[in-house]
Amino acid sequence: MGNTVKDRTGQEQDSSKPSDDVTLPSLGFVGTLRFVWRQLTSMRTALFLLLLLAVASVPGSLFPQRPKNPATVDQYIEDHPVAGPWLDRLQFFDVYSSVWFSAIYLLLFISLVGCVIPRAAQHAKAMRSKPPRTPRRLSRLPEYGAMAIPATAGMTPSSAIEDAAALLKKRGYRVQVRDRDTARPSVGAERGFLKEVGNLLFHFALIGVLISFAVSGMFGYRGQKILVEGGTFVNNLVSYDSFTPGTNFVTEWMDPFSIRLDDFSVTFERQSKSNYGQPLDFTAEVTTKTAPDAQPRQQVLEVNDPLSFNATNVYLVGNGYAPVVTVRDGQGNVALSEPVVAQVQDASYTSTIVIKAPDAQPSQLSFVGLFIPTAVTGPDGQTVASDPDPLNPQLLLDSYYGDLGLDKGVPTNVYTLDTTGLTQLNGRKLDTGGIVLQANETYQLPEGKGSITFEGLKRYIGVDITHDPGKYGALVFSSLAVLGLLMSLFIGRRRVWIRAGAHEDGRTMVEYGLLARGEDYRLKGEGKALRSLFDKKWLTTNPHKEQ
Image 1 (tube, rainbow, N blue to C red):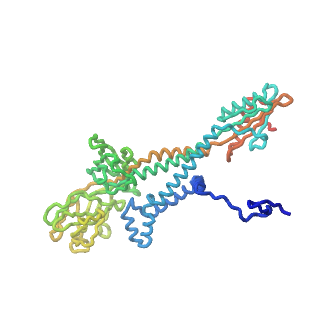
Image 2: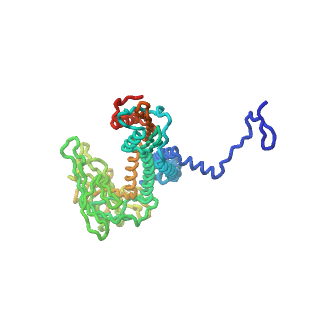
Image 3: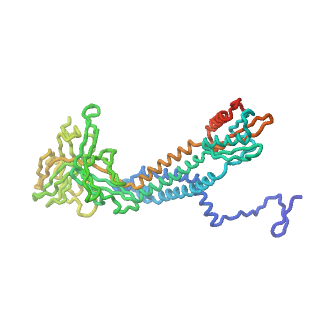
């Protein structure tokens, strides 16, 4: 007959049979929140979120990003009418400000904070606790040794333990002597707490890096500017050619500085035939001011050697030529007279150029073509560039007249010309031919539309201006992360126990054991080092003899 028990109703049931009505306790709302919090703040979740953040950043490299180049994004959507709008809805063109990327970033931050702070509290408590008690059988430890101190040394078990404790302290162990006045005293020692400190330092530094990046993304900005020789850039919004602010950017935080480009020079290779014409050095001589009423300062801007204004850096990222042109309209008035930036296309500095004169009357004028620093006639009779230095500069242009569409308020690219709706005046395929201008030459346009003069030549530089308030924090925390990682890798967490007892023949018997927390291939070497110290201290007559 099976065992019977009474249930709550007083009826007997066979306890040997499994019950079908077992009810598990419900977590409840608080219990569910506690469970979710524990899962979120586990190290496994933190590592998963870190990996997920790396994967989530991949689309930022695969697809054009709207903050950097909105025109490229618009062109991508136009070229992909099906996938483009969906990618835009999913914020793939603004990855680093998207809802899903920000959610992963925030969850990773919360996970790291919730994981590291309790571990830090537990480690602080462990550092204040006493070393663990001495095991009964030290011979079971991974590293074990025993030795006998001769009776002639005059040592007692208590004095031997005191000596051992002193030696362990010198090696950085935290020690505690136990059973000091008994027949079998012992000492427990522990060291390597800095290993966990390094681990915690690494994770705290990782949190600091995340905060630094967040500060840069929220309060920083980045912009680009083309600066022609003799031109001045003032650090305000209207001076930038393109500008990408942070999500919480405030205009009043911009550093008040100005830069005037006095001269720009390029040194080209002239000795080596294989590398002839390659640029060797770029040097921009500039005059800077840190405030409107500050004294001007002469400085040099070079590649990989930026100018710094507090947390704002100015980098030299490009250069080229800016032909100075004067355009007169059909009424003889000057419609345009200024340097026009030409975009470099190859190593010989062959450059495309677009000239727009919206103030020309009675018809607006425009030109598109090439600027060649050193023009020569090629085998096919076409003009080509032979050298990046301006030895024989030429402008090769086609001309147009008509409404440029600049009065409609629609932004247009200054480096492109939409010829739709324009009437062509000059071109290689027209009877009028193309315009070929040497320096200081003037060309009269057909139909009395005006003229264009190639006045001279200036150089320009392209600068990248970045304000990154979190960069110093990122540098400090990254360095701390490397330090913490090195500490966690190369510091061993070890425990040592030593027990002494008196032998009946007058000798003092000492045994010791070592244990590592985790894998430690240097534990055996530590055991040999301790044995050597014991031999020297107690003048053992039979060193290195294990029992």
